[in-house]
Length: 345
Image 1 (cartoon, one colour):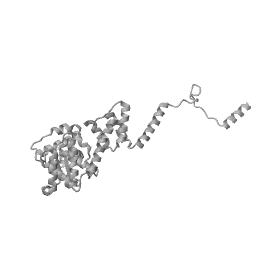
Image 2: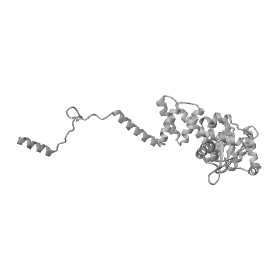
Image 3: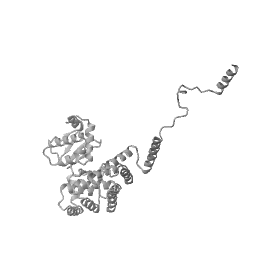
């Protein structure tokens, strides 16, 4: 498989054989394209066999795919958080690192991690980590976090705190609030905490006050949408997945609520699939704002009224047994000529 650009594959899963996580099968595989699953399983096979020098073209040849298909699959798993891809100056993938599959992966849909931070969490050297973790301030922070987590921090936990502290430049207060926020939601895994932190960084959240405001607004969006459906409860995972998708399209909660209201009127209940059809229709037709919707509704109303009014009534000159032949249009000169001919006779 040594064709094209060589990629160095790293193993952080401590596997010595081809092992497929049950979490991957339960949480990730059902929603994934079959080609993407094939690429992921092939990478697992390669790393378990110590065949770490691979290439996009080599994987493509082995699976009878195109290089484009393989690249899309890698990007998909990167977005899902299962792989970390590092690229060189020309944009080619040079390193692939496996992450452990996380249960309830859809919870991370709260955040979007498409945009990389200043420094990748896996790019720190041992020397960097030793330098950062030896500071009194960092030691104090990790001691507090251990009390929050109620356990000793693992190397993965330490790597995350290093990332928050050094790369994202979170203050100690913001780091503490981040862990409090995630633990209150019952989430202690590093992947989820990292995802929330990346979202805060992307949104420019650099103080506890901003984080509180953002979290309150985010949670209120769910409840506003659920109440529009007539449901006074937090969304179930499947419902949350729909809402996260609608928000990811860039729709304001008020527009989503409008789609929910129309759904209730049309179906008589909280039909998320029906509401998703409405929003998909809006998205395809470029309807983003209330003004866009008003214009679209007016056009629809005009078309509906035109259909209801039916075809135009037949003209009194409609063809019958007498005038079913093609009729001639006479001019004034024709009538004068005809009159003179009759007078001569």
